[in-house]
Length: 131
Image 1: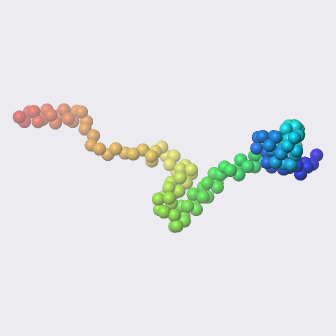
Image 2 (image 1 turned 135 degrees about the vertical axis):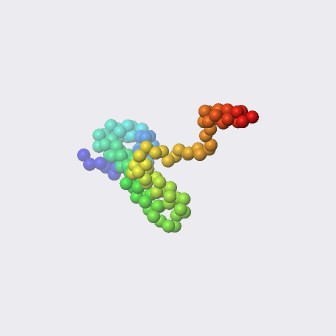
Image 3 (image 1 turned 60 degrees about the horizontal axis):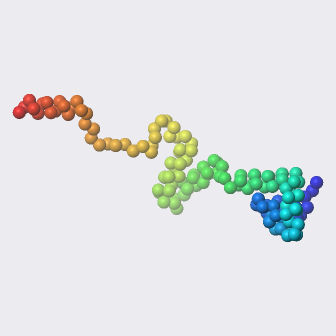
């Protein structure tokens, strides 16, 4: 069964509210509730709405290749600040698994002085014997 122009419009504008979508599609406001309900009982209309939603969702979420292409463009474009170019490079490396060697680069090293208890004891003993 081929869809009519109003059915196609209903599919295009359907946002979860069948009555309002039927009115927007050109159905009479008086019979819009019934028309919307009837349209959502039609297999072709339901299938077309599902396909429309699938297409919209797929176009809203960037795929991995698209994200990598974008980051590569930022990394190579000298008009961006170096900070942004380096961040793009870092994100590309993380996405590619370059940091999977077990080293977590987000961990900061504490390079302060470490005093071992036995060394402190020895130093105290040596000082005491000199007195």
